[in-house]
Amino acid sequence: MKKKSNIRLITILIIMAAGLLISCPPPGSSGNKVTLRIDLYLSIPGPVAGEDFTIQVRDSAGSVPAIWSDTVDATTLIHSTWNSFSVSDISLTKGQTYRIYATYSGGVGQVSWSCSSAAGPDQYLSGVCSTPNALQDFTFKTYNSGVLDQQMITLNTGYSLSGDNFQWWQEFVPGD
Image (cartoon, rainbow, N blue to C red; front, side, top):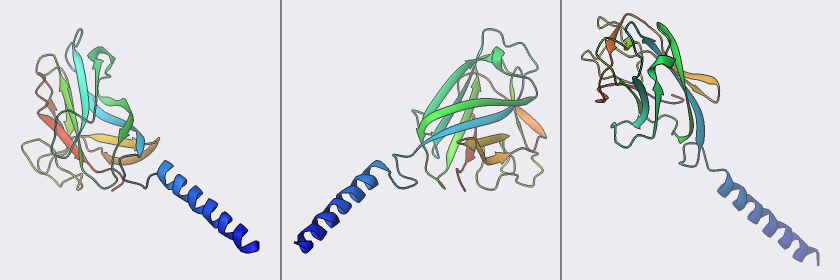
């Protein structure tokens, strides 16, 4: 009788463990949703009324459609400071490379994304960006569930955002 009750107990424990594994996927699996905040250091020297600013997160190849995208009224952007964008319910894998893309619907010179110097040194070793110089990196901070995860904060110059061509991007690697 004791043997049957031990077998039942073991069976119940195996079923519970299997259910727990299904409901809590391992880190880095597609079931892991993160709450991400991205900060970009932007300069807005020109008028932006009636224009849009778009930020996207894409995979390492820049594939379309984006993993996440948001468009805001450019008048909500603040000149010469960090502008924050909340990203929710996306799946990112720790150690995998992603790209932050930014564009502005207005004219050239009205919104610039700050970056490091072309003279180097490389400020963010975990990823490259789309500037013409491999030593440059765009300014950004990423926060995972409110905790600072990645950053490049060196401000030396910047590139104007314009059109909807998403030519400017910066790679980042969560939890690297």
